[in-house]
Image 1: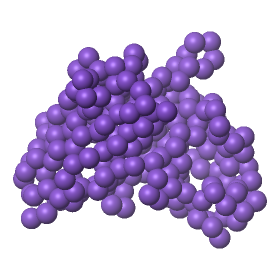
Image 2: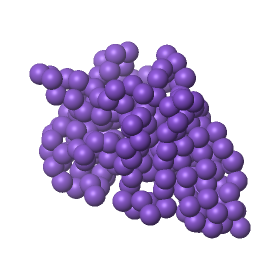
Image 3: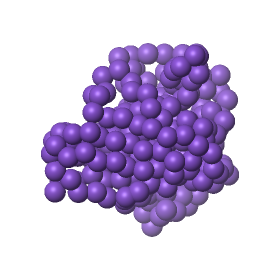
Image 4: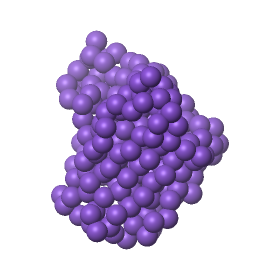
Length: 127
Length: 109
């Protein structure tokens, strides 16, 4: 059974770089058609997709965060990571990692859904 | 960017009631719409994919409908474990790009 677990500092200083790692267990991060995503939820707000990565290293970022985000993958460790630079108070949030997989329906149509999520890790930006 | 708007933002209901939550997209997204249930301290759970399809294990009291820009999630007879926050997600954007509604908190009346 696939499981994901986020890890990293819970406190990051203003203007520094937030770094989180997601460890995948119970399955391979090199699975075909799976993407691996970072999502966050600021206090009292909705979910925001940060970006995703394929095991090959191809990355896809939210345009609003693209200039500050780097997502990388380490297939040997079955992990993927998030770096968010120049953080501000607005980056304080609950950060999730999740797997994105295709769901097939009808006559071979498919859509992507967030299948398995980590429990989330709270990151606070402090001055 | 595709904006997703949910209504209402919060809802009070009793066990046994039926409820409907609405999600509207800023442009047509065909049926590329998923619904999730999120309970405090737990990981979100996929309830419905492609607007109306239930993953294995999701109770049949949950149903979804819609296409284009307007979608609904209906819970036919609320159970105590259904009180949670529900949010929609569009996956029309070139995979894996996506965006979410702001969520609807379903509370016990």
